[in-house]
Length: 246
Image (cartoon, rainbow, N blue to C red; front, side):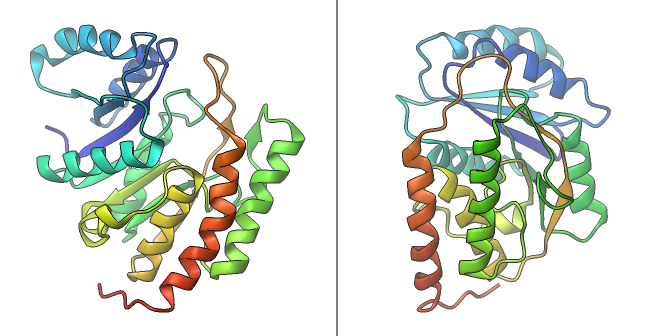
């Protein structure tokens, strides 16, 4: 077993799932994989099951968690975090299935936590400017201003507050009460960073290039942005009445 595992939530990702698994397994550093599938109607989980029989003959590196239905990105990650903690992984990562995150950058995120005294390494689109490929300008501006808005409301020292490409040291996820995480979309990503920062953990942004998916359909909805806009205020006000003990 590796000391690192990447959690990849899936819903209707049959066009990407085999390719992303193969790309992660081909990395120069061993990283195990947990696919959390929300009962994809397109048969995503069945593809993973076939790959498991091939890949795990020499050791269990590909894991699959199947859930009853579409329950949201945040709950998928929470389930994955609990699984990874139970199995004893030291470094727990999250990434998308659609290659918007370059699998090669997983190694850079782990290195930042392993050698850089960092507790949470964030694959950042905005720490060195705007590093986004194939997004319409309106979406780039919306995402960039959303992160600026979060920084303004919370004072959190992170440029890409909605980033979903992250490596955690296990102690971060052991400290944050996972059952109390409230949000499921963009606000979920903000909430994890906010609470890690409030608990005193060291956050570091690692510059990446984010590329819009070329296969499958985006899961982005207006409701996700609305949740983030309102949720940030709720997070900040809630923190006034709570003590965060490391």
